[in-house]
Image (tube, rainbow, N blue to C red; front, side, top):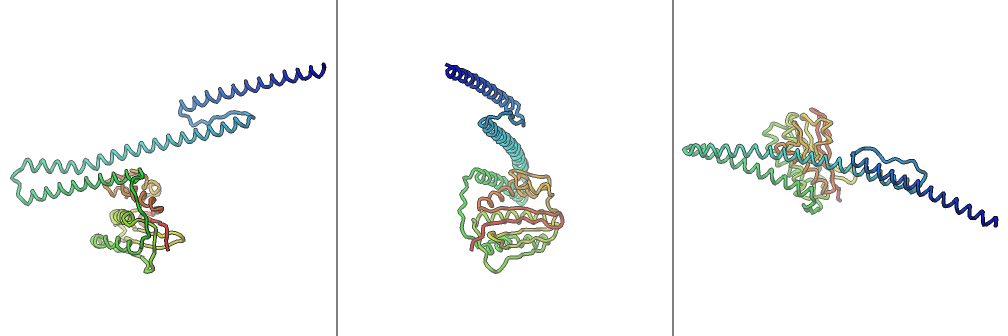
Length: 309
């Protein structure tokens, strides 16, 4: 009889303990739900904290806080993207408006003055044609970036003879370099160097960076190109001694649609497409591009691609 009494007491205690545990868990779960709603509604940076000895609840809290952090990061990324897109639309609208204004103004002049001398009319028509080409090129660059961003642009990669492609691109600018009164410092080895890439993409990358160097580095009176290898990489340095890029801006100039009042990323009339497209193309070739700049001393863009034997 005594044993039975003890068993009944133990069962009663067990039921009480289970009830207390269930109630405590229910209260904790209610707190978690209410607190989570409050954090989400307020878009707060607060974490969900709860003092508990329950191992499973601790795991749950860790998982919830990780999700909250990911959600905050997603919201921040979305806000940056939205701001970049607004800035992009403003820039492109401005860049389209400028040549279109010239086109419309020129056509209006020609309509108001039908008796313009033939030579003057031909000059105006030539201006309209040049501005129309400028508009088309800007739109094409915008769609190129859209394809690169969406992953729709295919870029077949092959073994590229980098010595030849570097010589070809620097020679294409040689007349411009001379006409600007600049000297060219070219360091391309005789021994062949091969990289994993796409000829069209490399041409465009080198064209973008060289044109930037000439346009914005002309004050240094020298333009340089160096091709070399390091471990598993083929590297191309394109450098100048011009006004350079501020240190704070060096980390930003490759960002999508980032433009500055005095930025090299304005190589396409301020639309912020040039270096963005360049970076995306290099990344599609499993490479990287970086910049280092000391104003009026040396500004160098380094393109690194996978080395092949």
